[in-house]
Image 1 (cartoon, helix red, strand yellow):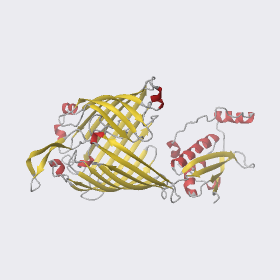
Image 2 (image 1 turned 135 degrees about the horizontal axis):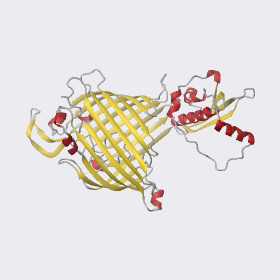
Image 3 (image 1 turned 90 degrees about the vertical axis):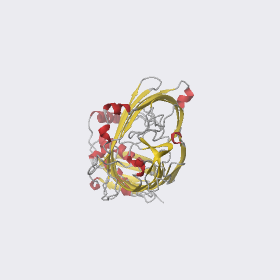
Image 4 (image 1 turned 45 degrees about the vertical axis):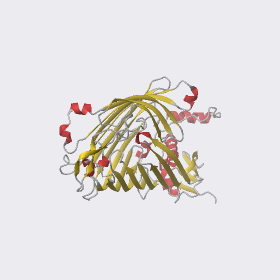
Length: 510
């Protein structure tokens, strides 16, 4: 089948939101070290473009190569080309159009060519947008990742179908199977444009099952639907509606855990503001990043709906040191969650929604909130309560039946870290980006609800911080990221799950 061509002239163009151009930044690189010689007329034009604004308008845009993709999908992404008034604006608009089309992930290549306009219309230009659609619309990947702090591992796989309907739609299915911990099956779709909405729209249906019997003596099952309403470079707004069930198969849960077993309706709006100016998200050596997440739960009018307000922030800064590609990364993160409604200070937050600290994932790569505290196991620090035997009437029998404790999480969490990364002396290691690092981390987790804030003082809050330090080796590959760290626990509480020694971690390469 011959490729289709789509034309529109300047009279058919529609005005574009100027704010869209602010979402992109561009770097112009020299692609050819030996460019062909330019004529005197061309050189004069180049100098004029550099020194002054040269008027120009687009007369016609020609779209080529889209045998399956609808013309409206491409036309919406190249709106910036229609309203340019100068050569400088046209060059920037061409970059914008190319980046937007590539972000759809349905084209193998995108080429935007600028040509002279009709001979009888001086000061005009024609633009040719040529795309090559993906030859294989089906992609997938699979990986095995270990979580030593939880003594488990997981098998993760995903399958993606691209542009099946011709509207730039991406359909994806994923499966994560973790032995004795977490199993999740999900399916979803993303559309670059839905009806008259300017931003992409996503929908995801998931079924999640988590076994926390080793940590908090309960199992959790959640089935829900998530809708992405707004998604731009700096802003994200999503809505989630799900049904969650907490059960205790062991019948050894502490009193605080048993009081929250049952069914819950989750309905919340989540807004995320993100700025990331770092030169890398895996090994940043320069720049800063900031993320703020606000979440309002319980907006669905149902008495079983979990009502809470959750606020998190995460601030990072990477400082290059000027030798051995060394850089100092520092970060601080915090979060607070509180119920809302009448008597909220006397109420409690649902167990699954609280903050839990610990884990062996590098805090340098986990941007979003207070999560990792190296050297402590997943959910490895309090508050906690002893597990007790349940009587015949569902009441506490009054004596401890196990040395295990239920870790209940907290309402206020704060973490901080400092990480010094550096290249190793051997060239073969530097070529593979294998590098070393030394780190120090600290974190606190306290309870505020059920009037616990009345007993919290500055001294008690200062004493609630746990600390660890260490050094290690990081081996990044295309399949996984491996860390071998020696962690030394500087401070822990009586019932914390922490260990001084060598720890391994395998995680996603991104």
